[in-house]
Image 1 (spheres, one colour):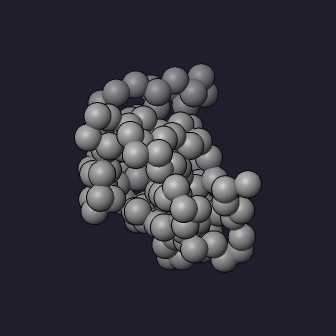
Image 2 (tube, helix red, strand yellow):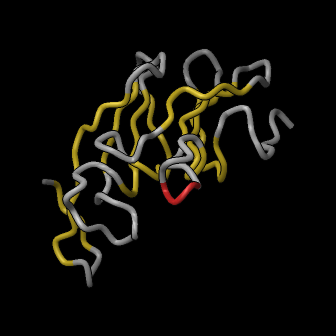
Length: 137
């Protein structure tokens, strides 16, 4: 076993999802909750984390629930420069009424290899909420 999540966890997150490995053998992932306690009704809007080859876990980025997104879900992607990309279920365009009680309809995000900044690459909006189809804005 390389790493066991606990509560509270050093990554700052809870409910880990999807892992990906960079060129150096470090693991990166996201948590759907945790991080910023003023977000998502006190549960937090999620965290991106790194688990180093030594087994040490460190938070890279804490989602705010704003334009950077909230509640990341699914797997991450890593590019040749070890930048991370993924999707978040909420956040983004906060005027959009999403499928949850959280604000925004989600984003596709990118985070620098150092985890210094998340950028919203695209906000998504539901075209028909009853059919749960999502289209790029």
